[in-house]
Amino acid sequence: MNAHATPAIHALARPEVPPLPAYNAGLSSEAVRARYGASEIARMASNENPHGPSPAVAAALAGLASRVATYPDAQCTALRAAIGERTGVVPAHIVVGNGSEDILQMLCQAFAGPGDRVLTQRPAFGLHEIYPRMMGAEVELLELTPALDFDVDAWCQALARGPKIAMLANPSNPVGCMFDAAAFERLLDATPDGTLLVVDEAYCEYASLAPGYPDVLSLLRGRSMPWIVLRTFSKAWGLAGLRVGYGLASDDALVQLLDRVRTPFNVNHAAQAAALAAWGDEGFMRRGVAETVRLRGVLARRLAGLPGLRIAPSATNFLFLDLGRPNGPVNEALLARGIITKPWKEAGFEHFLRVSVGTEAQNARFAQALQGILEGRP
Ligand SMILES: *Cc1c(COP(=O)(O)O)cnc(C)c1O
Image (cartoon, rainbow, N blue to C red; front, top):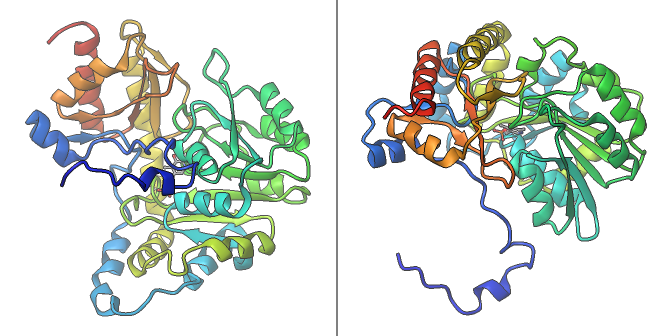
């Protein structure tokens, strides 16, 4: 491969595209193994589930080879019916995506354009910012409070100004903080009817164990603004590698608009079969989530005494750590020990590192490594 760019290529691109930041997907285990010579890799950068999916998933995937010559169900009929049954949302109000990222992209393609304003948080989940900008919309970013929490007053004021779309991750990635039911109701009271509210609940299964976490569907029902709640099989359900997310929407017209921009066969056979099997074993998911929440507490207590370290309160399967020093060298030292975490790159957050809660052994290894690094031991 050469690095040559044809003279016209940048002029041909839509003006929104060249300035977009690339999504920071982090380093692969293979890359870390090759670059640092580490033999055992601890993947703690992407909030993946160390317990994996229900054993029912492997059984469901085993029979798939005979089906790969045919297109998958473009409507995800069985999966939408199953999701509808447990959530109480009718299938006509449900959209399934190739990951919930896919639904975020559909939402921006359908609703965001030049001159539109999209409201979200800083630091944000990258795609809450990248997809609106891709469509030419402006993004307004709200700051955290000094205690690393959502600023509910600032959110209410900004919502009242009537953004076209509000992208609200509850709980937040990367911070882990959440709006409780009272705060969430204040947000809803502040939101005008003309604003589309996107509530990204990628970590809701973990947050549902945190006191005060809102039952968002019951709060949204009966409200007059359009809304969609996004959830994913990537985290608690252990299916990040197969890419399945879903949206529960205020109305079928919203789902039909997303269907116009959705690639028709966006969720493949394996993804649909695996998601359906995982969904059928809710007990497995709940046990894994409870274990991760327990281990998050163990890890936070273990880290709490480290010099100069501050830990944001978390309702998720990760911790956002203020290292009190630039995260680059700390990250390099962790990688040299085979531990992959996510050093935050956004301006103002270069002292922060996000670490996913792993197995008990991974957490202990991370805590010991971080302690050594912060105390200056080689
Ligand atoms: C992980 C994550 C997602 C992405 O989920 P996929 O379903 O894997 O695309 C969406 N939103 C937030 C806030 C996340 O952290």
